[in-house]
Length: 518
Figure 1 (cartoon, rainbow, N blue to C red):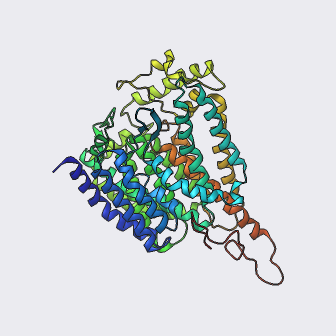
Figure 2: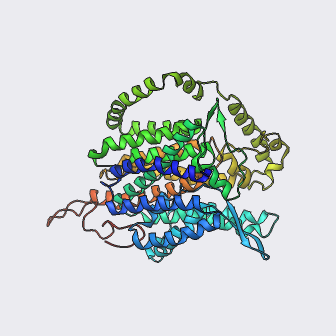
Figure 3: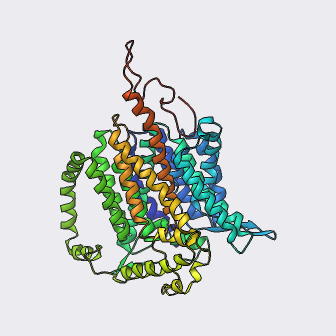
């Protein structure tokens, strides 16, 4: 049997029971027909991935599938999330032979942004209220504008449109759609659910990659003609799972986000046992990445949630004691190796911490030379050349340094300012919320976990798509909660009861993402 068929069979066999579990979690929140659409589109896209010989044929298959999604799904935005992790996040250069060698670099998330998010954005833009700017909008817009202007520094004139198109597809489009397309507390819950469901198959597949020391998606990467610098990456003799994220730390970031979103779901105590099982799958994938940054990021996320909701956290902790003890008993022989991998405690791969500290020192020297707007040639500086690793690359294992080196302190100020603003607003909303319809503390925990984790890695593969989309969701949740809190504070009229957060107020009636039904 060819390698690609063998990999496909394994992936399908692993994913079927995962989707059975996901249905138990999802159906209380969304209709069964909608979940079946999520599941069937995921399987169709996965089969298409392994039976297409290159990226462009895969794109031709995805186009009619996305058209079908727009016609059949009540919420196309959800399918953008569900399908995001189906294919390897590898960029392929597109152009017109004989005219333009490069027009834009495309990868699966950008492809989905064009096929799914762009039509939704057009529909949303037609509504006048979606054209009004908020503080968060201005911060994101200023950051995109700055880095687009700085793109003119590129020595190749043909690269400038390609860079700007990438900034729009990666930042502006996901932010706009998520910040405008989510309009009710139920929508917030549904998007969190979509993140959890999308990451569960990836987590289970990653666990199998770890156990079998076999990267299941490498045949599809080779079919696209892509070259992987390190096709197999090990730590302490164990394979670090990557699945479609290509990089283990990016895969750990995906699992961390999915686990946080599953914890953030509100309501339906009946499904709590199934959600605990789903959380176990996602944590298994997180551990299989053997990536300390996402491990610590998830710990930070949980800590914020626990401080905000101690009673719920105690219940969850008690419920997880027995499964945790069972896992320790089953894998007792690997417990010492696991402890050896822990940050600050274990001694495996000590060179990683040394490299990070040296990178930080050298990067500060380079930033001092071009402090305001950075430089496009920062990788050619002598201090950075000293950081070349054995694979012949400079690994910028800090997204904040990455922004500061390329776009200067001005870019770093706008980048961090936007996320800090959203985080503070989430904290204030958590402290003042009286409706208890949106889990602001959980959203804050996930966002803080993301912001911590990107300090340990560069923004590669799925990482930027996740934090820009999720931050857009947070902005939407703040917008949803503001009128709801105002309606709670408003005194009840003498003639009848208050409409409440989900009553007869036209701004607060449930709507379907991407369509304007009531």
